[in-house]
Amino acid sequence: MDLNEQQLLRTIVREEMKSALKEIGLHDDDAGDDVRDLRSLITDWRGMKKTIWNTIARAGTVFVLGLLMLGAWSKFGSGGPE
Image (cartoon, rainbow, N blue to C red; front, side):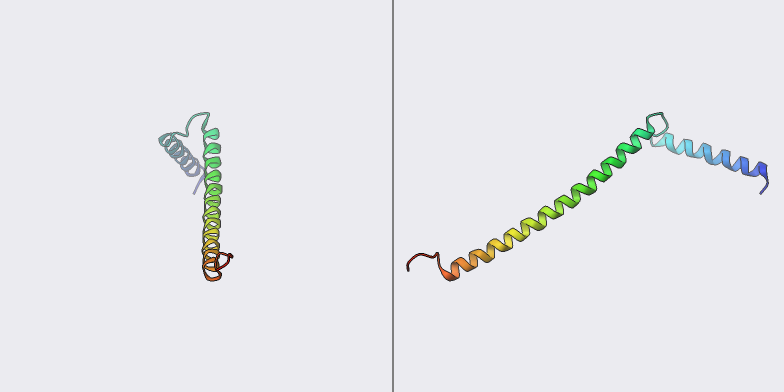
């Protein structure tokens, strides 16, 4: 590939990239901020998913422990005289 072909290819790729960015709305001067905001949202979403799953696991653990305590209480009585 000679120098002219490389320049033509670069020009075509550059124009197609500009076209693609314009299609998705990232062609203006605020595009960098938009991308940073999107990355921040994705990071926050991942953190939120982790927190949700941790909360569900803890709630499940408390529920199972509660069932075990209820079973122990019913087996051994309420602790009062019978």
